[in-house]
Structures are given as C-alpha cells and as structure tokens.
Amino acid sequence: MILGLAPAAHGANRTGRFFTGDRSGDFLFSALHRTGYANQPTSRSRDDGLRLRGLWISAAVRCAPPKNKPTPAERDRCLPYATRELNLLHAARVVICLGAFAWDAALRLHEIRPKPKFAHGAEHATPSGPILLGCYHPSQQNTFTGVLTPPMLDAVFLRAREIAEDGDF
Image (cartoon, rainbow, N blue to C red; front, side, top):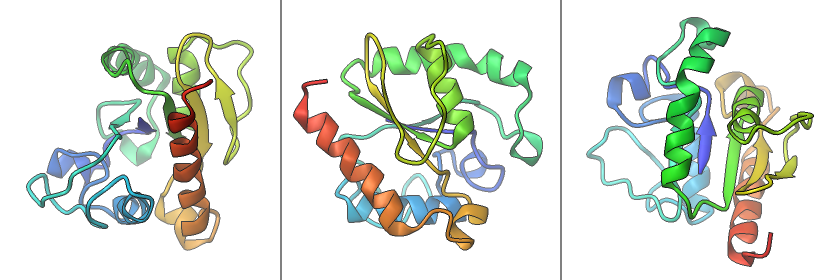
C-alpha cells in the first residue's frame, strides 16, 4: 500500500484516482512501472488502461486541502477512513509512506508510541501488521531539486517488494 498526503486539487481531485493527472503522479507512476507494479509509466485518467499489480494507493486525508496543508482536525476526521481501508487490505505487508505527514498518519493508524522519526528509507515494523517504509514525497519541490531521484524512489519500491515476498516479518 502507498499512503500519500491527500488528493491533489488538479490531480486526483479532478480525475478520481490518486496521483493521476499531475506531476507528482508522473514521477510516481514512472517508478511503479520501472519496478513492476504498474503496466504503464503514466496515468492521465481513470480510463487510461493503467493496471497496478500487488499495490493499492490511498491517502491520509480525503479532501484537497488548501496549500497541501491539512489541519489537525481534517487529519483526525479522515483517519478512520484510512484505518478501515487498511483493515480491508488485510494482506498488505508494507505501507510506503510518501512524506512525513503520511508517516505520521500510519503511526497513528497503528497507535505506535513513541513515534519513530521519519526519514527516506526508514523502516518500522508495526506490532500487528505491515512494515512502514518512509519515502520522500514525489512532489515537484522534491523531484525538481533532487531531494528525491528516480533511483531513490525505485529503491523504496524494490525494498517493499523484498519485504512482501519474504513474508517473514
């Protein structure tokens, strides 16, 4: 499972599919294709033929917040939806958290205290479920400045596959 921040105003909020039709999605779906999770490197609309393999994409917040900064109240109101979704994905062995906000939401979902620090490539085993993997968000700010590069993103997805296939966690 990939857990993002929220639907982008001009991406998922417009298209109805997370990371579809925006630059973050272009970067993300290209990596998913390179690492075998997607049948094509782009996602433009819900009916573009994209198929994901062994992966579900979701978000911690369900609305497009102003300036991509959800309030604590928005975060808390949306958390039960993410909890229910993760429960329905009972076979999920890994949650890739795109950014510190998603990392914090995943820690809240699993009621993990004290909270381990977010970092790109960070791993944390949950007591009763999936392993959390930290990954910088594929935002334009991160990808245009080189904070997140294609090899860095690919490494996270390949590590997720390694964990999921190992099954011993």
